[in-house]
Length: 425
Image 1 (cartoon, rainbow, N blue to C red):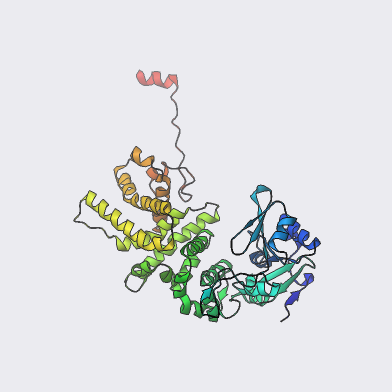
Image 2: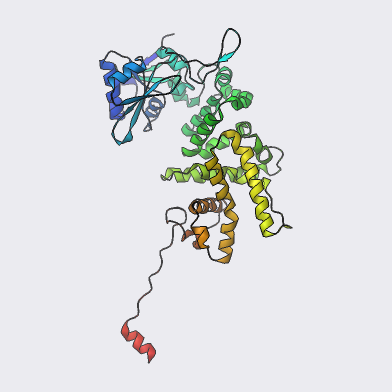
């Protein structure tokens, strides 16, 4: 099948829109007789009028040939070697050789055993091994055309997210593609093709077969990119969240009569995370996990009015650690991140007590997690439409809680010597 080739006059991408270092790499490969394409998300974003975060390149040059052309490069990866080319200001251009299949695709050998294999391929094979059609477009530096093997240009115009090939088969080969479909739908505001959406509903349990660390990284990426709320909303709607975290069934499943209220609180919290990301405030992993667990802990660790303060704290701490273990451990969350998440969550009642007493003890203010605990407190207050007391706001840097900046302290006017004498007389 011949690809659709869109010549330069018929598309909006110009060289002035492409990163200078990416152009250098494309041209050097081209001058040495290799095919070199700008690929994936960068082509998609340029066609949508956005500035790409990364400019990735695919070529028919093999890794050792790319390394020979670029001394400022390093090979990474085990099964399939990628080349990272380094430029000033820590900029990296990633170059890959055309592949015949994804490194995460599972295939069957003649004996019926599941195997994973990677091999070099053609541009057409490289396009078809990608996840969705709008990510399968190539920009050819040789004649500045766009090459479309998969119908990506038509889907861009129709604002549709669709898998390349049969979605049921593609999700079976690599279930993480379900998360990526949802991610791109929420980032672009496009709708998901009906066959693709139904395949997510049908194949969502397949997600459990993936590597926990890979799922963790993909999921955190969704939370950090400024579209956490719409992404989580869609993940909840498809029940993919319950496949990822079965322990949350008691919170967001039918067993909880207040599931709609708890879902709304959950999404509101991550809407605030999106606001922080958009003003350039990255949110650390343990804050994200603490926010993620907040509705679960409210349901799974209720207050016991008959317990004393110490017993209540002990009960809460033990139950919280069990909840964190059950929900986060299968997700391969590092031990240090889980511990910081626990400390931040356990600090919340102490912050409330400090507010009631009107003073924050020094031992609390010197804790390494104090600012993160205040940020979590502030996010929860904001989600409920409440204001964080000035006592807490004045105890942390002024930019920690962007919704409640510290009020400047009024300078006391110094009395003149004449007014002092008059008062004394």
